[in-house]
Length: 101
Image 1 (cartoon, rainbow, N blue to C red):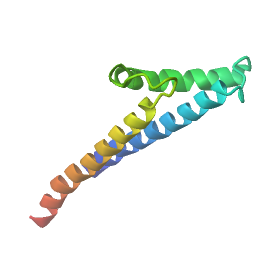
Image 2: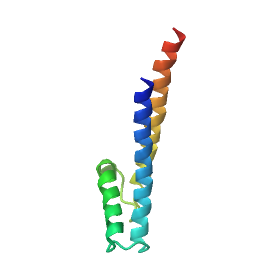
Image 3: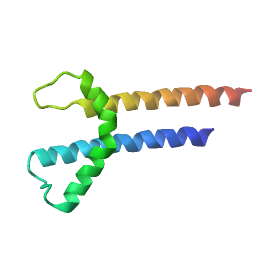
């Protein structure tokens, strides 16, 4: 049971890192630091966009337009961190009660 909680927590942690990297790549492209005409840059940006966009799209529908500033990655990271904390509490509740018995 412990391995399942570890796997879910690790997957959530990796997705948080993917969100951070995707946001940084997006900013670097927006400020013309990275050029998408470069095939490697385009492939990396496309990979992170395809990975994170399905999770960010529903959040963008509820957040008002802030004039070009996209805070949906921050909101999603906060939600994922809350899910990780909740998962740890559930794990402690389930495994902690079985240890006492």
